[in-house]
Length: 359
Image (spheres, helix red, strand yellow):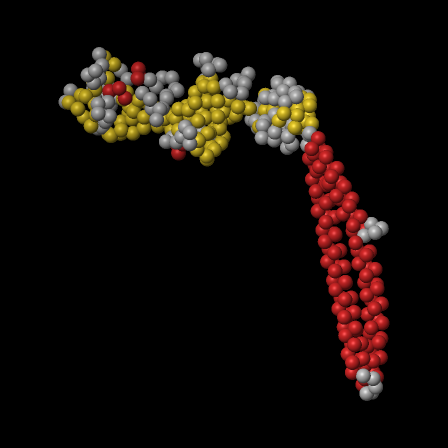
């Protein structure tokens, strides 16, 4: 764990020295967490195509400003157009089967009409024969035959009506499915143009005209041209000390000697298992005039300021919690610390002289 103090004046020199002899001093002790810094544009994202193909044309260049919906890259691919035409033909066939001049339903309707006529004829013959049989006229065999014909024609008519209803539902479903498939293929044919999702700047165009691309490859990197986010990598042992709104002091390699202030705006909860760090975002209070993606530097997140506490330089500690005095070693109770200084809670008076340990 590394801490850095970024407030001038709170240095070891604040303790009076005389050939290695000093006395504890009261200061405002600042605790901070050291992190590395990377600058990234706000809303940075990789633009992808939803269809694979060949880059036919690139409409923008790196560094161009773009608006929401502006075309970036044109893709060509014949497969979706062929799929769309096949889907259109399938839809046309489904509609003809359902409502055309020679539909499947029309054929069943003709069969129902014929079956209905047979049923009426068999019904008349059966009930006529039944009346005669009730009067003991006619033979039992003739009665049974007329009854059987009546029942068979009745069942046949019911089966045809059931077949008609089932076929109608199936054809309706086939039409709806063909319509959905056709609409889907139309969407794909309109997705040959990659467009910007935000108002921003083109930061990168990793592909060239004529290259074959897939849906997995980024075709452009787009982000804000004015707003930048500070990405801080915080060690897992320090992340519990970080909360939103904390003050951050930043130095950038591109701005040597300058310190910029920011505030923590977001703590991302997912840990990077490769380097055991968490990503924390901060926003500049007063950003530099010129910023570019990838600018790096260092930062200290101020986690605590203890006012008017008794402190000694950490270089005067012996065995991590003792100091050398005229009376020998004294054990101390220590508190907050930064890179150079540590708080003394008890065990040492303000005027007690302590000595630098033997090297």
